[in-house]
Image (cartoon, rainbow, N blue to C red; front, side):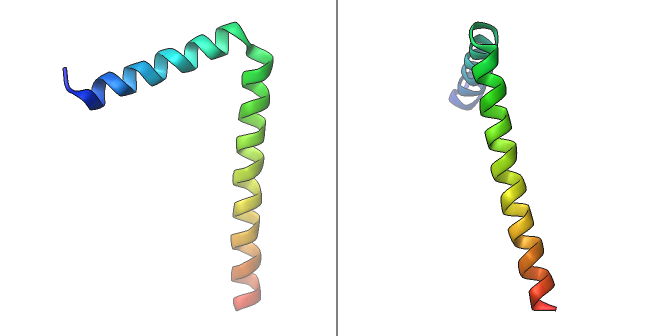
Length: 52
């Protein structure tokens, strides 16, 4: 088994453990990440609108 595959499985296992052990915190984390992505996308859209 190569290192990349091992790290992917370890990441998935850690994410599942976090989801099961603290679902409210996991939901908050997902909400914050999606909010940051939305803010970035709105910034890019605003830049493009001001450019044209």
